Amino acid sequence: MATSALLQALTTTLTTSLNPVVGDAIHPTSTDLLTSLTTTTLPPALPPGGGRPPPPDFLLHTQFVVDRVLIPLVVTFGIVGNFLSLVVLTRKEMASPTNSFLTALAISDISLLLLQVPMFFGLNPSVASTDSFKLFVRYYTVIMYVMTNVFLTCTCWLTVAVTVERFLSLRFMMHPRLVCTIRRAKRAILAIFFASFLFHFSKFFEYVPNTDLSSPRPLLPTELSLNKAYDVAMHITNITLATLLPIVALIVFNSFLVYFLATHRRRMLRHKTKAGLGLGGGSSGGGGSTSVDMLHVSGVVIAVVLVFVLCHSLGVVVALNIAVHGRHKIFSDHLFVAFKHVNNLLVMVNSGINFLLYCSISRKFRKMFAAVFCKRFLGKSSSWSLPVPLSENSMATAVSVRTHHAANGYSRSNDHSGSAKEASFVRPSPSNSSAASRRSADHVEI
Picture (cartoon, rainbow, N blue to C red):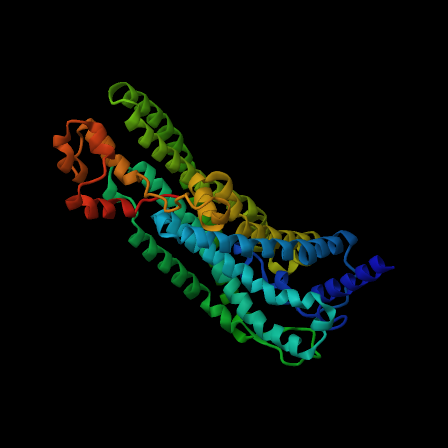
């Protein structure tokens, strides 16, 4: 009896969402507004028309499982995971260009997930039936519609930015001036957030809240959203700048990143062998540890990119079909409506899974996480002020000293040491310690 009543309620809700003139008034959940990067221009409801037959059972089950079970769980886990990631990534020992991008990515993801939380209160029938909540939803839906698109675009381009940063760090490792610094990373992050907000600002004027609670439409379209030229231009621009271009850039730069990561690993193995023969095991140990850290952070970025592409692939398919056949025709098909709900779930998964990727791949992230959250299990003698590891930039300097191809701070101050081992890994003298710290501070990796 309970199952049949639930299915009947879902049937009424979904039928009303497909045809807002028929049935009781409804109020959109988070998934009614969330359509991923690929379908950002979203009408809250289809135009009025004749009655529709009840949706099929597979669509009802998909909507129930995705919207009422999985998305709340994924959002809750994602908020907690991104918060833990922020606590670890913002530690001063973790300061680096890559971690600056990952921190901004966590902020964008947690903002996107927090936007969904107020809508979850509507899952409680007693709350959803109150006029105050209905009115709140109609005003909040406008804000949610715009800011969801803003943070999705930020997440997309931050993923591209961190991939490009890793590519430059590996490709131009021997040229420290060409790689990204923390200052440059912060400027790029601010530019991405500002450009994303500016790009979607016009969406604030596409819909207005419908204060008539007896009407099933939560929002009313404005003249701007009804303008056919504007709608076509925004859809083409969204698909180009928020879907196709970043996806192509991610595939290209991630392919180069994988290639340089593989070749760099082989070079470091050969270098470690030569260092072991010519300089002794002590010097190779530090370089090997640094190489492993660099491989780990590059592996984290590659994993983040792969998860992003996989989670947004369904949205790309939906967007391309919308571009070819039109939005109203696509979402009148029950299969594509089910795809929309699944795509919303995948977007939430993409925003909430990065914490697991960091923990599973990055050794330093796990150590810092234990340092921050597990002190009470470690005894008082343990020191959790992690030393700044040898960076990619300083490692390039060490390699340059050994091969006598470059003259830099380390080589000038240590040419008289008589040992490449001392030139590479001995702590700088007091007179040069501040300069050495500035050189390495911008390149500490996750």
